[in-house]
Length: 381
Image (tube, rainbow, N blue to C red; front, side, top):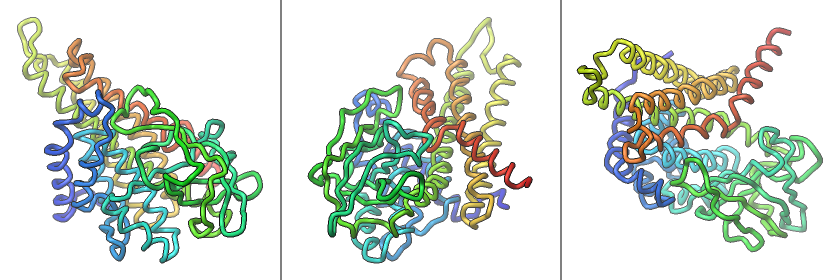
């Protein structure tokens, strides 16, 4: 196991930190207020290799590890968790094409995905199928060389502003064995999008429903065989859970740093806030929890990289623990700011709003407990 970063990993992290400080952080509040999707800035990040972090290099990817990705997404999230999270979703969708696509499919889409000339969304959730993803109902019926799609996806990040949709659809019977994965161009006739959802946070990326009404998609756009789609979706979520955990920790780290700086300046009862032992202990607990979550994230990422049999369980554990910790640290940082923490100009309330959804997406934290419990019970038999 790895408890210190090597020179290459430090360089990767520092590059992402510098990019976040220069290109993301100064604009994060405005993007949130204006609901601006910063595609131009994300494409700048892609020039540094962040558009295809763990995509193979024969199609323009950076061929880095999940561990490297965790460092990058945490660093980017210090500038804006929402922007970092969307880049992670784009990477996850692209990885599905890299891991499960044919050589023709990989060379067709991935070079432009790695530069983010093309941007991808991941489409799994439906109005009636969230945690129970195997119950999805979007239907794809074979008609010669095409599938005809009908159905709806819900809560799709980037929808309406992205070029490709990596969608899980039902090509067979009920249950996970009837699900396949299609890569769908966003401008396909019969594909439409709902209004941009009004959300608590994550305002710097659009979230819309995606509707399919007799949309025709070539069979050649299917990843792997029919019936493999649920496996593809779950494999993608292992990495997605690490990425969103990293985004939580990056946002929480910024909140902690802001709280520490504020406590050095603010006085009460004739003393600086950082001179009160009770508040010192609160700050210490925040740092301890954050470091514990980061260590857990690193362990889970290393396990996924080496294809450890327990990787899925460790990713679920890290996601449950890390996203809970990230939100709590940010919430405590707001409390330490007092009334000023509630004002948007200090940037703390945005972080709290952004991090709250991390406990829900990529599988709710209740589902993370279910994954862990099942693994423990199966192992005891």
